[in-house]
Length: 228
Length: 228
DNA sequence: TATCTTTAAGTTGTATACAAGTATACAGCT
DNA sequence: AGCTGTATACTTGTATACAACTTAAAGATA
Image (tube, rainbow over the protein chains, first blue to last red):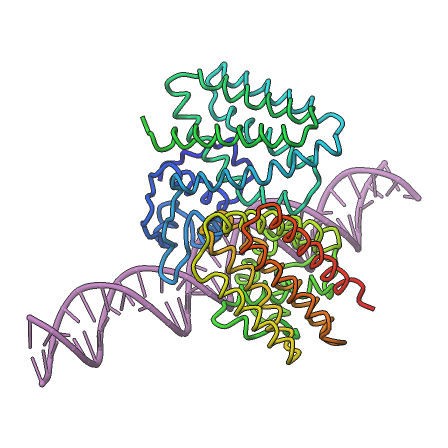
């Protein structure tokens, strides 16, 4: 089987993790379509491994909601347009919670860190590096979420992290293939979030975060489904 | 090893699920304390199984945040008072979202279903059946969450479901051991939620849900830790 | 004594083997 | 034809085997 997941994101990863990342990508890309039934033996054969890491991968994807484990085989659920909408509902819930807390208890170097990440996004955009761009986009949000020191919220995030990253990857790749123009909008959206954060205005933060995710959701959804 | 998890909740469960449920209970009860390092072989020996289902169980507990998988062994994190506070932060986020949606799009028989569940709680309380009481308490919330038809929110819930159920179980057992008086308060709290739901008043719903979880958090936290 | 080497036991990640259950197709019967 | 029983291939859940790595301690050496 042809590996498509960025190998730089798989340093030190076990076979189970590699398989889950690759399957996740193929499911989100639509290469593996909803309704298909996967069996452990078949996947193990395709990846040239034993069933053990495959079982691990399937369990991961199952808790992420991309497949459903049944008695005979795992049926692919995929990531529909509605799923992405729901995903961004949750992203808003998490991040609004996070930013409201960060506004109350400001962190030392957070804003500087975030600005540096945005600069890295600009750099990546300049060189059409969609892998790096997607990663820094994710990283931006992850840094904020980690900063609040809320274990359970961080766990919620970890539960959707891989899906978000992979969806960003697929969407960004498609968009960068034509032009890197949209990157400026994405970067501006992130700067707006930093501005909202420093404003410490609860209502303003909520408005900006909601707008950000509504915009991102539309962009990602369009890129993934409105294929060409 | 002595099994303490209700066997009625394990019908048709695999060894992996049974082990995760049992370990989860022991961790939340504090029988297995934070800092302890668990090894797969050791646990497999205690349960009289092979490492395969143990690995599955440890991975489950790891994604739930009760343990942390390291290179050599799994270190127990446990469920501290702060963890419970965070857990109820998330319960509020989820359930407020759910109830706001349910208020907008009312469901046919939902209120009747909820009232029936509350009646079952009263029945369970009358017979000091803490297992049934805990389960119906969980079921009440689960029915509402399932009613909104939001896959991703349901997944968030599933990620904390087992922890919530087990914490309720431990707390309710301890309280019912002395008196079943507090059950009336819990039941009233649930009736308040139903009232808030039918009111369709967004602000009122938020207020009631927040109060409910604040009260429950305190009760659960006290029961688990202020063991006396 | 202090430090480096080596040796041993323990750990996980992966592969393989086995057992029990399920869907499917096919043969036989009415 | 339609139904029934059975054989068969395939599936998962669990057990066992093996390899690579980590940790810690024992022992040699200066």
